[in-house]
Length: 313
Image (cartoon, rainbow, N blue to C red; front, side, top):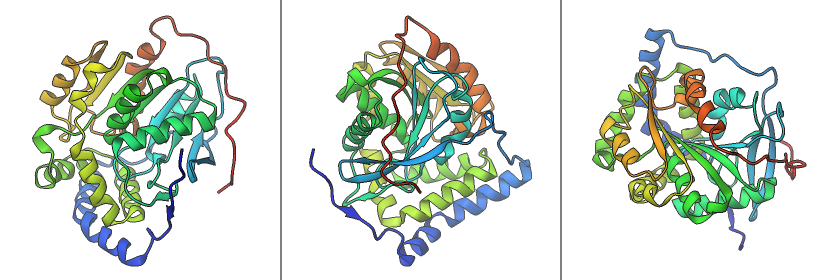
């Protein structure tokens, strides 16, 4: 595949200032509410943090988190982040999964510490990049957990590269058709921030600042323009949809509509959870995921020899 040019100006000061104005109100509101709830800190489930390496994919360097392997020969899991942010917020669920199986969390192009492509990529292009990353990392077939826009990406991957997908976990899938515009989705986003941890609010704010307002704005068009509901009925792999009971971005009606379109799958709800269950309620999410990941006659997977390392951070 052709290499994409790399754009390296995203951290220009004026972009950071513009992004700060855009997200400042939501961040302040979320911090104040979460502080009142005193919900801070996430307990690590494994003694070692994930290793961070860079994998070169189609001319771009993609940061990848790789957890120490606790159990080889089991189905690996790839964690796919959502809109505008990095895979850092996948660490709590990654820690728990890594006790049982190989786990990876890449930053997709234009996100986190990975290189920026020349333009914002579509959902289909991000799915193709994810497939190329899997090849570069030595992962033939895997389970995938996506959150928010990450659900749209892994669903697209399952359609475009079905041989690479064993099963999908969709946590807080977007975008609800009742809120496919900024005026309709922003109040839901701010309200959902009430239910998230302080550390997550700060993490998201930092990743948004790194991305910059122009890229965030263009990626919002990508998110709203993709119709997840038209894809799920064509996915042959098993699918588990998980929704937090306090998630205002993903309504109960929308989650049930998506579940009704599945060929093989189900919907589960964490009553006291919010949008980022993998961060705020990882133990509850693990209890739901474990039987799903273990169900059926799974083949034995050999652990890749190692992710190719182009450069250390």
